[in-house]
Amino acid sequence: MIARFEAWFARRSIRLKLTLAFAGVSAVLLGGLALALYFSFEVGLDDGINRSLDARAAELGALERPAKPTLAARPPLAESSGAFAEILSLHGKVLDATAGLRHTPLLDARAITALHGSTLISDRGNSRLLARPLRDARGEVLVVGVSLAQRDHALNVLGDLLFFGGPLMLLLSSGAAYLVAANALAPVERMRRRAAEISGGERDARLPVPASSDVLTRLGETLNAMLGRVSDAVSRERALVSHASHELRTPLTVLKLELELALDPERSREEMADALRSAVEEVDRMTRLASDLLVIARAGEGQLPVRPQVVDVAVMLRASAERFDRIARTEGRTIRTDMTDSLVVALDPDRLEQALDNLLTNALRHGSGTIELELRERDGAVELHVFDEGPGFPEEFLPHAFEPFTRAEASRTGEATGLGLSIVRAIAEAHGGSAGAGNRAGGGGHVWVLLRPAELTPDTRAHRSAMAPAGSRSSR
Ligand SMILES: Nc1ncnc2c1ncn2[C@@H]1O[C@H](COP(=O)(O)OP(=O)(O)OP(=O)(O)O)[C@@H](O)[C@H]1O
Ligand SMILES: [Mg+2]
Image 1 (cartoon, rainbow, N blue to C red):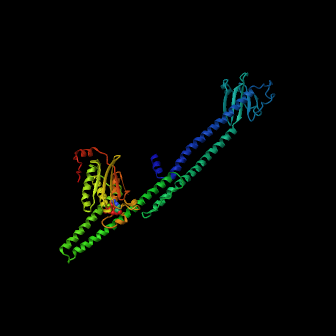
Image 2: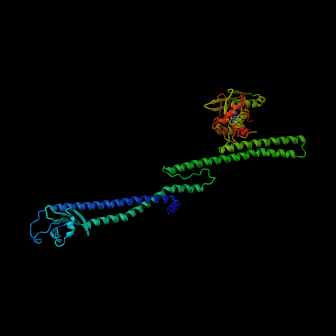
Image 3: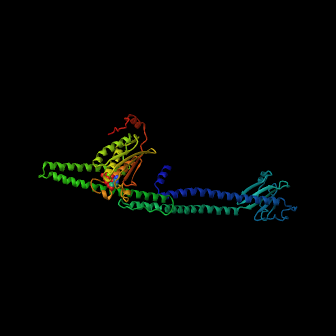
């Protein structure tokens, strides 16, 4: 039975549940209050009646009675505000009485004997009697009484009031509770309806937020902030996809041209080989672009995978610098390094190398003069700085330098796709760090990366002790 009620209750609307809970609690409280009121009123009334009977008995008991031999010769006992009285002999004979009671004994002889000298209060018909032996008398008993009609009437009125007024009050307050609950939940329904209408295409779609300052307002604001973030992410994704398809179109067009040229029957063998080599270069470029896009997409999903290993960053940096130094020399440029001999931490070596390659490629491609590579360790974080002596970043471009597919106007030609720096930032963030760019006071670009190494675990420590003293990387 209870289980069935619970199942039924669980299926009701919040409004109805609130109202039912309110009505249930109110009914118990109102019922308890009504009973307490009724009974305390009854006790109060009875108390008052008993005290007035007692006072009347005391008053009559103290009265001097005229010593007339017969009842008829004596004047009737005085009445007092509706109370009547009688004096009875031990055998139940009326000795004295208020008017109208001279021939009706209020107690019979048996009841008088049963008194045994004590006071008795009892209800008879619709009156209350108090019987008490007279002080000096020889077994004579004084009986005073009062009608209970007024008391019963007052109790009936109160009972009716509580019996009909209580449920009416309960009905009215439950109705009010239902309206308040419906009113309080109306903003939720408005938000739900708006949310059902919002499609993926609406950029500025927001939910209606109630004007009050309660939990619903905060919920609306939080959901709207989330909608804002989602719509930003969707816009970024769209921009990325359209940029990517645009970037892929160019090498595909070139590739098609190269292949058509290679197929031309009038081509010499060498010309055909040239065209095919060029086609292979285009395919390489597209492969690079595809893997870069994968890195950006994964970073966008917040899951760029990082596999930390204990590496000597100083050794890695020097190795990269040496590799790029050969290319730099062909352009009459040099790469200088400024770093400690060894800095052993747990980082993802492949990602670190990818970031370094992108920064050095940029310094070679977009900068000029000497390239300086700096490595610092600060508060447990690894800082990499790459400086060059070129034109630096245009000021208005700096805030966008790390966004995918963005390039300063000057570098919009050639091989560049504008993904290098965004990959550097994604790698830094995957390591719990950050990346930034700026210009040197004396001219030239400056790009820095901050990486937070992973905790050294027993695994990585074992790897560390197995490393050669020079800290050369074993993963490649
Ligand atoms: N050292 C630098 N000096 C001046 N400008 C720079 C430097 N590094 C990057 N930039 C500017 O920032 C832009 C973005 O760099 P990013 O590495 O993201 O792309 P990219 O080098 O153009 O292409 P990609 O790296 O994908 O081949 C560059 O196009 C260039 O305009
Ligand atoms: Mg680049």
